[in-house]
Length: 305
Image 1 (cartoon, rainbow, N blue to C red):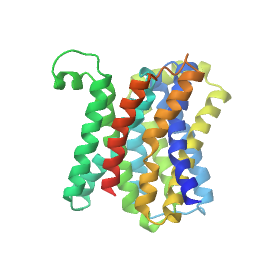
Image 2 (cartoon, rainbow, N blue to C red):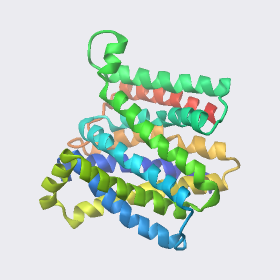
Image 3 (cartoon, rainbow, N blue to C red):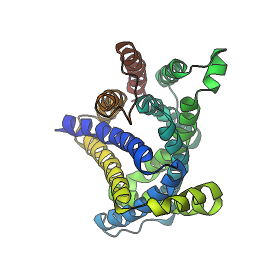
């Protein structure tokens, strides 16, 4: 049972990435409007989580940290939605997002005082090497390796996005020992909502994009956004359930990291079924290359456990 639940987690997380691609291709032309839509849906989900969590008011400091994680996630989504809109290969970007553990490792060392082992440093090198190798494969620019990497939009933006995401991971880890999942998820979701208010207030581009999108917003669009949030919550819940049921937390974490292969598989399937939206490179050589680098990243994640 834990194996089945653990495999559901990467599926749900990957589903959110590909549904985002659909929404931004067919429903919302300007990706800068999506963070505000996400914030509205997340704030509503926060109320649901709060009810499910027993109407719990938590320690103000812990609440602030949980909301900080939500806010940084919302700010990261500004970059995330632009990349998802622009990229043809969602699977590659999903694989690159697996460098999040590198930031978590660094922040755990700096902020939480956790020690780094030689095995963790090897894992760090493996994940970073795979991300660079995959990005060089994507880059069609000429010049040195450094020049090509600097022109790799997916890699540079993945670095920035995962840096912001990792703040949420660290804050959630810091306060998770005292509360249940839904209790913390409520405050994290409200943090996303607050992040949306801040972003709307300080960014004319985001505000303008949302206002321009208002005439075409419908229950269908909000329904898709709500479905996406449901997928995301299902991914987090199934991952938590897998950790609690698995023989060890490390096994559950490794199983969740199979998202690198789930993304490639779903990308191949959608490119065959809906080529007007999903245009992954699905030749045998392309799939083998992506799979090989994904395997290196998975190996690094295993060593981190």
